[in-house]
Image (tube, rainbow, N blue to C red; front, side, top):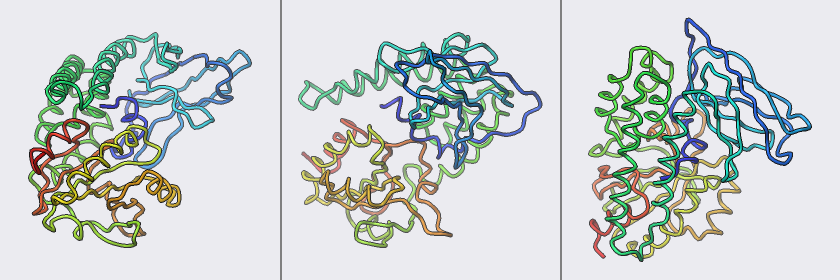
Length: 358
């Protein structure tokens, strides 16, 4: 479970787009950076394809900045700098917010009731995520420890959504995290629990469309064939999946730190199960083919590797797979049926042991 990266890398598959609303709201955000970290800062929201800048500000000589403007409806936004860094995520509300440095070296938004409440929930989730990251295969009963902590994580998350069905906190937690472990029907049920005002938000109406597409790639459904651009040339998923092997479709990028952290485990599992009918197909979201090729070779990713760079007129595999964040994966049975989604760490190891033996 990686909280930060799931926010930073991914919402381009969540279809976060701004729609018109009858009444706008004003935001007022000030802050101070650490040690001349940047000269410009930006308040941005993620659109379906692009980043939309809501406001920008020059950082003064005392490292402070001030962002002010209007937005049509409550939404999730990011503070970014001119060095390409995302400093923090925040929920835009009609309160004066202050961006403050944290003890861990990052930043967070304080001062408004919405963000202060959101920060408490995120800190609790972060504490459990840290414990999850410390689980080792050498621990006594690592899978049981993983399951226990994941139950705790999901309980905090579910409670956080349930207690905020009438505000943007619940929307953000649901869209970016809770929905990732839900079936399409579970998502529909949860959507109906939100207040009418929250359901009318553009991000929620867009998510309804996402759910319908997601249903096509649920567990129990056959994989959707798409063209692939592999290290060896043009190919397709149908040449890999449904050919009598267990296949892990792994979505990642060289710029995604949590993705890179999973590579040693993938190497281990591939070495252990390749001769038992197991294949990995890693599909990168990189946009620089040369960087992708170099990274794959340097990290000894000896299985099938592809990059998601569709030609004009082709549909991206990301769209077919309905990814919300990376790292993400699908486990495909030998007959081409999807049997699991988003297995990581000990959960992935345990599933392969169950399917292919020790």
